[in-house]
Structure formats: structure tokens, C-alpha cells
Image 1 (cartoon, helix red, strand yellow):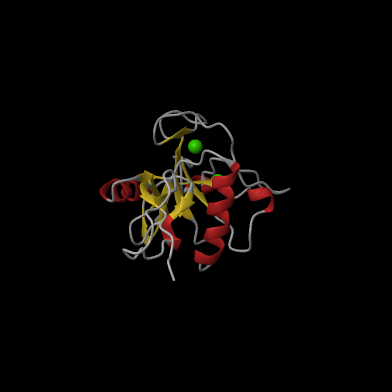
Image 2 (spheres, rainbow, N blue to C red):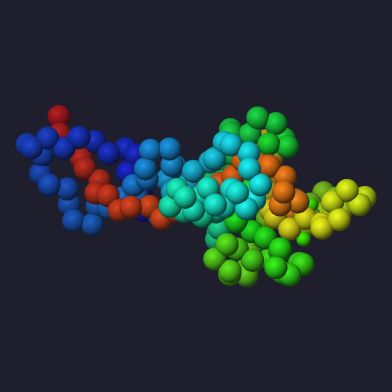
Length: 180
Ligand SMILES: [Ca+2]
Ligand SMILES: [Ca+2]
């Protein structure tokens, strides 16, 4: 569905919009993509706190269902990240059972976009030589310079503060046409 962001005024002299001319509407501060709205939350919080915050805003941490959605998020983050470590939490965790990755709606991970280079493959459940004995059970994403093949997911200790991506369903609006 189209975004409602290009909605024009519809003076009374206009014909009513044709039936079925619907679009996705997001609240101020949320970005529209497909049928969903995304909020890129700028305050750094732990994964649990980030999730709580998203729920308070009427959504949840983002669940990535398609390559198209990953492309949208990856591209948007390039412009929002201030440094390469300035990554954003997403709604994926293996905190219940190690290596069993679940989305926040308890669905199992299907398509994935883990980061991988010759010397470091994610997820690695890195224990940081004992400083982080619990390993890494939450997922953050983003590459400031852009990710090769969209692969920019990293498992990380859930206690590290990060920015986050919240997601919720778009409302349905009607695309109006401008009369001049
Ligand atoms: Ca883990
Ligand atoms: Ca990792």
C-alpha cells in the first residue's frame, strides 16, 4: 500500500476519492513502509527497556519478515547512525534457549541477515574473554557505511544500551487528490 505522506488537500469542489484508493497512515514521528509504521528511537536503553518502551508507544520491537523490509531498515539506518557502533535493537533474541532465535511474537527465525566477514561470523555468542559470561542473546542491526547483501545483524549482550526500532501496524487512510 502507498504511504499517506503525500496526501493533498481535498477542497469541497473536489470529487470524492475513488473507492479503494487507500493508503497507510502513520502517526507523527513514525515512518511508513508497506502496511507498517516504524519509529527509530534515539535514546539508548537495554534490550528489555527498549522493548518496554516500544510497547508503551503501542508497538513492539521490529520483526523483520522480508528482504524488502530489511532493505528499507538497512537503508534508513545509514542516515540515522552517528557512528558504526551506533546500532539499533531489533525484536530478535535467543535468551530462552541458546541458538534458538525467536522474534518478539514467539515465531521462529526464518530468513536472516546476520553479518559475516572472513574473520567474524555472527551470531557468535561472544563471551568477551569472561567479561560477558552470559554470552550474547539480543540482536542489534546497522552498518553506517551500508551492509553488503543487507547482512548487518549482530548478537550482543542484552544489557548494552542501544537505540531501537519500534514497529506497529499502519492505520488505513484514503488518498485524496488535489484540485487546482
Ligand atoms: Ca546467544
Ligand atoms: Ca556477536
